[in-house]
Image (cartoon, rainbow, N blue to C red; front, side, top):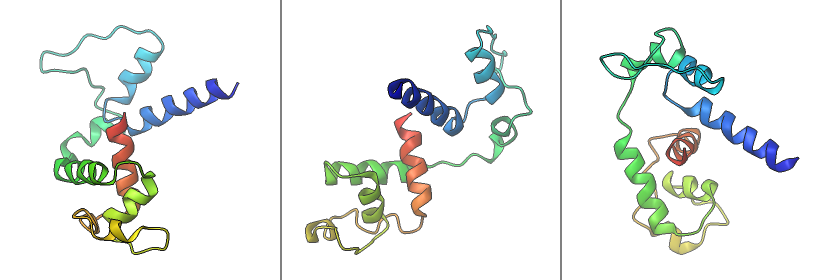
Amino acid sequence: GARQLAHGMDSMRRFLSSAECRRRQLLQYFGEKLKDSPEGQWACGKCDNCLNQNKRQDYGPDALAFMSALSQLKRVTLVKAVDILRGSCKQGLAPWMLELPCHGKGKHRSAQFWTLLARQLES
């Protein structure tokens, strides 16, 4: 039913947002046992994640800013957290939210970036 569909969608979202070798993930999903290479984790060298491995960036400062915003905001939706990080002054944001230290700290990134980062941190 609905719970199974939600679980399937969550699994797909985790697969798509993962930085791990896609082939490895698929083979493990279907029960294949893989041995890691001597250098570390097994990688196919052909999927998008393996090919982009050298293009990885450090998003630690962004992750810290996001987590700091969440700690300042307590219970808000992801959309509101992103709006505040990006410095929005939209209606629906309480005046105290505009005074927070995190307000506007993430305006150098798009709303899509912050949403994807949040999902990556969640998984």
